[in-house]
Image (cartoon, rainbow, N blue to C red; front, side):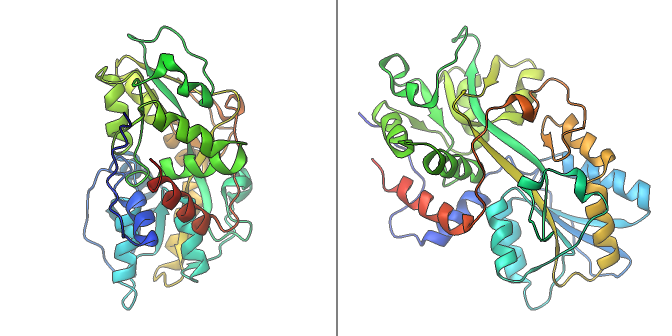
Length: 338
C-alpha cells in the first residue's frame, strides 16, 4: 500500500505551492521577528536563518562595522510575503534567502540591485548570479541520513531504495513543506536519466513523506524510519555532534547542492550599509561562522570541522536558467504522483 502523505490540496495554484515549500520549512530560521526600522542610521535585514547563525553574523557585523542591524528572521516564504506586503512602502535593505529560485524570481521582477562585492571573487561562482545581483554565500548538500543503531553501513545509490530490503524503511521531506526538497527533486529529475522513475519506485516501496526537514530527520533519530533521502546535511551533522544516532552519506551518482543567497534590494534605504553587509557576509569572518554551523561556506578555502567538504561530495550540475518556473513544474508533477 502506498503511503504518500501530502499536505498539498488539489486546486492550489502552482505559485502558491512553491511559496509554501519555501515558507513552511521551519528549520530555516528560529522564527524570531524583530521590529524593522527605516532609520537611515540602521540597516534592515530580512533573513531566512538558520536559527542561531543569522544572530551570530549580525553580532559580528555590528561589532566590526558599528552599523546597527534590525533583523526580521523567518522562513523564505514569509519573507517573500512580507516583501510583497511592503511593496508600496519598502523597509528592507538586504534579503537573505534559503532558495536560489526565489532569489531568481526577485531578480526577474527587478526587485534586486547589482553589487560587485570586494569579496565576491572568493565565493563559488556556480552558486551566485553572474551579474552580481545575488551571492550564494553558503549551501547545504542533500544526502542520505540513516539511523546508526539500525543500519551498520550503507552505500546504496538513489534507485536502490526501491529494493525490497528498504520497503517501508525510507522517509523524505515533503516538498510542499521544504524548499530544499524541491531543489533535490528538480536536480534528481532534470540531471539524471530515469529520475522520475526513481521517485515513483520509492513511492511504490512505501516511501513516507514526513513533513519538513526537521520532521523527516526526527523520524530517523527516533527509529521510526531507518533512512531519509534528500536529508539536509548540516542538520544531520549537528544532530550527530549532539550525540544522536545518525550519520549521512552522499550517493556516488551525485546529489544536489542547495545554495543560500544574499542580495541588496532595489529600494534599499541604506545602500552603503547594505553593501558593507554583503561584503561582510562574504568575508572570512562570516564564512567561518557558517562553517562552524556545519553549513558549506561559499568560500571553499574556509576550514571545515566534522563535515565533508564540497570537494568530497559527488554533485549534480546546478542549472539556474529559468529555475523558478522549472521548480514549480517539478513540484506540481510530484504532487500529482501516486
